[in-house]
Length: 186
Image (cartoon, rainbow, N blue to C red; front, side, top):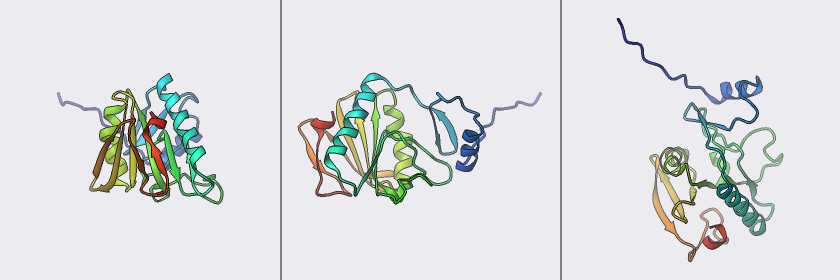
């Protein structure tokens, strides 16, 4: 008897969009396309949802129309990945990204709020974002109540990694005049 092993079927963005348009997934399904794999996302808990709201409100207060704020909306990273980060600051688009999703070149800051997905966000998501040149990636770490800041992407990792607490303030790479208070985020 010959052993048969299950094989993955990897998909690309075009097929992913066709599946969505065909209604293959139930409307309530929360999924992302990561490196060609369709992954189910964890349910959003109270603490996670509240922190996403807090982050969004914080950046709306700080920013003007020169930056677009997207919350839990897709970004396109190459032909095999379309994650839905919790918050992304992107360059403005004349049609507000109604004809395409932002790409890595549009991203000024990408943020994942993490509790149950902390390990995944520190490994697979970090590698994905660094590989695609996302210049600044944050993990709002709800487990340890801190902010992890990753900068200087190179070869699938970040050269600059900082762990910040509520006592810290710092400036964004893409928006150096903007000072961020970690206490306002956590």
